[in-house]
Image (cartoon, one colour):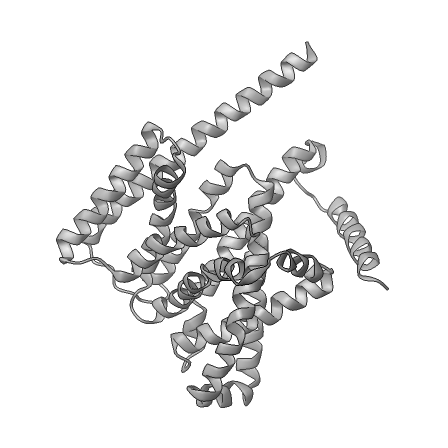
Length: 340
């Protein structure tokens, strides 16, 4: 049976099963747009929950260090991603996109964001088990705010009053934390300061998320293998000799690709504002896991500075809700005009 036939059979089976379930009335009687919105929200929630699970994953892989877990995750992700693209028949599509690139300059431009991507994934696995879980989560809270600032500075985007207020609250929060500690966590700065650069570079390059991920992982895979053989042979022996670790690392790769895939699907199904608001679920989960499950320290004095940052996030969410309502009104008016 071909892949396309298998996909059709699976889709028909899924549709038949869904039709027999006691689903909400909006799913069975609502419009296709409403069903797409529900499915997009479901994918967004699932992806954020999966990222939360991955954040705590390192703690279940002791005695592997955070760096070793990062190395294994990159290899597992590469294997899972390539496997998925081959089964779905989409690997050739992404390879064709890369064949268009010609010359060392274009390839150098393509690989420029890769070190940022790798450093972010390393910090994501290293931070929670090295006392930087709260600070890393705070970097993800600040990330959308920094994207607003970068958009304003680099692309000339105009900010609304709520967006300016959000940036002001965030600046006060960071300033308060600097005054309190006489420093600011490098983990927080690295996440919110460099991750926007990665996304902006990929946007300027016109490279899709999956294609960029495939490039980043493929480039790093040989270095990851070299690290295991030359600098962490004990890790290689531990994993290869344990069925538990092999299964855990397979799960790490599958969960990583599934989290990325559902996140990308949600971004394509949801309006930008809705997707942006849903993205705040991930850092909230990371923050809670860092304090509860991972036992990272959280001092009561941090509430003031972090509270200001959360106020800024609240302003961004309010801005998104306002834009969404305005878009809904415009759509409703347009439909009324068409009917008239």
